[in-house]
Length: 414
Image (spheres, rainbow, N blue to C red):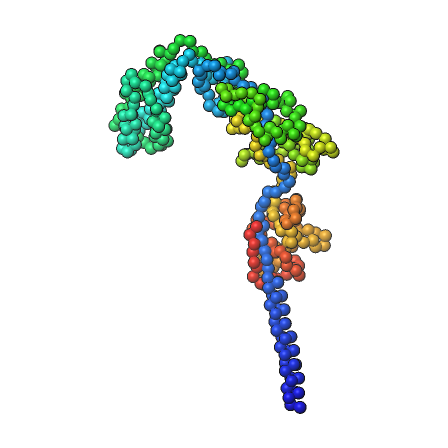
């Protein structure tokens, strides 16, 4: 009898112990589950966009073909040339061209020496820099000898000029060195060979040394006639123009009116509107352009060509024929709110913010949404609504406006 009673007692005790343990585990899990999880309100810019490769068309023309001549250009990429302006010279012999290049080197060094000499009038001394200049001038060409390779010397003089903010001592007289290079320049002008001719521009524009053969038939007038297949082919091989340009001196771009041909799917084209102005991201810059046309039938063709017109300054992109771009179809700036933080209470949309130890309901206006977050309006001047770095409570049940929350929140920075 005692053995049977003991057995029943063990069963009852085990049952009670299991219930107690289950209750403890339940309370622990419930406590963990109720731990606040929060994020801070932070500004974000988001919206719909279309990205891909685009083709650029400008009003440009090739400079005359000089493949049978010896010539030298005096323009740099992006430099402006006026109508009737000189952009280069043609020479009768390689020796005459070499003489011109040596004169150009001497002229540039003379200009730098002039600037350095003017700095020697300052009242402070930098002996190390003075010695460096003396060393550079000692490497001058001998009289009657070719100037030789002055490239390294030019670079060192350029580096010296970067230090002109420091005052230079006045112990060294550079007048003799300066006169030497001025003399080289004057001798060239006196002894310039007869028969050389000047290259004159027939119109004004911006010079580019890059030419690909498309300049003559990829024009502003016919840009809108290209279908997606043709534009894709040029984008795939932007240097396959049908003209041999091995000796082409370059081209001129006449103004800042240009077109962007952007082949996209019919689906992407549907989110853009012809006649509307859009912001376009291009190699780290943003330009403004109007969607002037969309070529092709969206009901029959899988890909269309969007034609954008712009007058943005293109002096940095004169050699650009193709590039990746992003068209910002819709853009919103506001606070990023995780989807599971948004609440609808009594027909009002908002979030719970932790203010001290109290949960407060704050109404928000939704601007844009994705599968994982919302962008809500950010009124940076008002006194109501969300503020930057407000603590937003997410994924927590049983909240109401004014509820006291005492447990420690876990914050996720977003």
